[in-house]
Length: 57
Image (cartoon, rainbow, N blue to C red; front, side, top):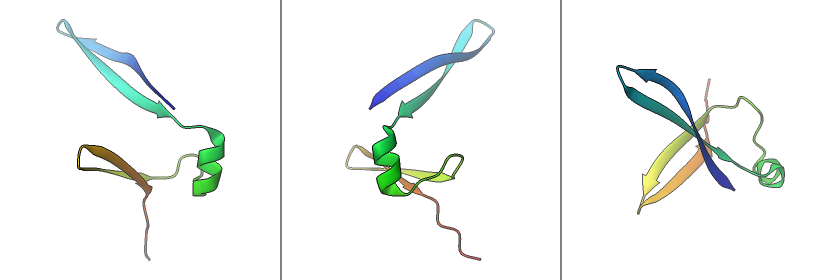
């Protein structure tokens, strides 16, 4: 996996970055995640926990 960033905009001399994590396809398939699926993120013990958002109708 890799953390990547890009300058998304510059305003009054301040540069704002956006970040994304590149996750290998094999991991995405094992998790059953789909493109454009909503995900939740949480920090626990200085670790990033990402899971798909569960919607109950």
